[in-house]
Image (cartoon, rainbow, N blue to C red):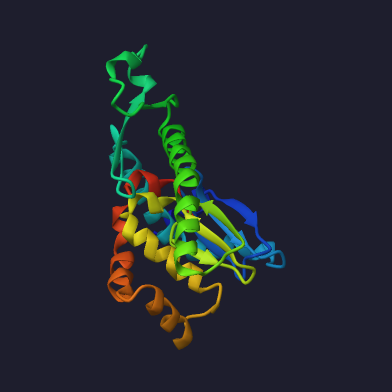
Length: 243
């Protein structure tokens, strides 16, 4: 049994990434990149095989789980966004040789045409479309919320993150998650109020929450909704996120 285990550990492949931002060594599963070992610059390279061997069972379990998830993923025929209650048809060119845009009336939204042949390419193009749409819609709402609340910010960026909906830096730079488009507009508006309040208080102190309440009296209900909103993001979108 010990020999079999040693052999299986030898077969486990990984990619190494040295990150100046890493505080400690860790293993993570990239959706299409397999097992990745992330280490700080000064981490001893000789210890990496032992780190991988220590967590080999976990890594194999996660890799198997990821493979099963990829097989079960079904990409959307319509891209539904709760933010603006829109539904845009999606056409995958690998499913047919030609696509007739005349099938859609002038009143229907123009379809999203996905040309990739692999699942990774298709998801990448769908996420790119979401990112472009988020850049069109989210900054516009943030500027309006800023005007209404009297809370100013310096800059806004749109990113894809796995866990954080938004953030605010000490310089008043606000970052918003493009997946907010899958959430209702009222929830997104509260998230923006929350981040704008951080331009005054870069913490979660009593003063911060008093400022939040002054701009959004029912903020507690929105906080509860926001904590459960990750389930509103489709699995195929989260499939390609690893940070």
